Length: 364
Length: 182
Image: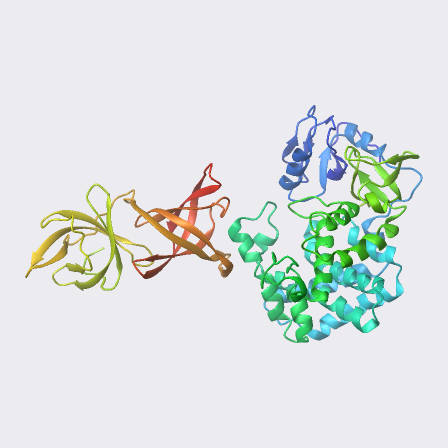
């Protein structure tokens, strides 16, 4: 970030706002039209979330140069922070994402889902899982990306996560490839959902939620060209072990292992992603949820594979802290996964519920 | 609308006294269009010969309202509909109902989406132009279009409506005012 004229509005990331921050200047939305917060206010987390929603999930807000200058001083000088573009180039992720968008766009225009197109893309994902280090695979999944790309990114990410989980479980190549395929297919039905609901920058109404719950059946119908076990596993990704899922209300062993793995990947990817209606969560926070509130719904042994293996791939990566600083993740504790040690301004800090990791960080 | 315009035989009919008190939901057995007579099942015993009453006939796409007069011929009671015109008001008369219903279809950008699970609601009142119902909190947004199904005296009725206002209650419910469309 460059230092600029104090009197000119300049963009910063909304993620750099933090609870307790005293706003030095007026904050405007991404279009520089709407005043989101007047200067002098002390921000609460509710206000930050509300600004995020009013800004339609867009990351950019505008402030005057004084705030801009203050934000610039909160970045670590001893580490190179990658941009989203750099993260995506490392694995050919950008091309895979674009081809996925083409597939989803065709579906939204009521064209058939072609097995060849899907197999081409999942073949690429399979290659990534075989050849790339886990840290490189995980990076675009945890990256802060435009909300407008959510569906295509999520489709790719769940495919990748399924593949990673398969790799960490020690499965053979055929089994891993099948998991990748199931993960990639799981949300294709969403391309047939009303865009006005999919992109709503607010909580869905009860009726809208009952519309969205149609997407697993749509996924199943779209996947007619694939084997029955693949179709079912893809469509069952919202089933839960305690019977609280949909559309079939399956429980326990009635939910296939592939569907359980996909459910874990789906929840992880959705929660760490920037959404139109809510900001992203830290990967470590999501992993802690797997052993707490999600324990009865998702298989603990399978989610444990993620908990045990994933933190190592986040080491030495930049994280956004709750006070707006950018730290470097240095150590994660298996007994207290949500509160790692983070290096901030060259000091090692034990995080807690007052100073905690908000999300992974990358430049736009 | 002229009383000769449609045949109401088999339609569900809601009958109220002239003060708007609900008397009965029943069914039109026969509609003699020439004589403008409605024979209904279970005429409310409260109504006397030559007494006026308000009628809401549950036609699609919207109900029709009339004023009727109780008449008797050959020992049988019937309702004589006002000749010529439906009673029209700028603000349509609202008839109280207490009927369970469900929203089963959502309409968005011209496309219809059958809900995974219908959302159950309770009708509060109905008129020729719209309906008010109570639903679970935050079921709909203003401007949403949907189909609502109700069963009155064994007769299923579907109406397409659009929310125009809402009122949140303290009981984790929301009342929605809707107008009929389609």
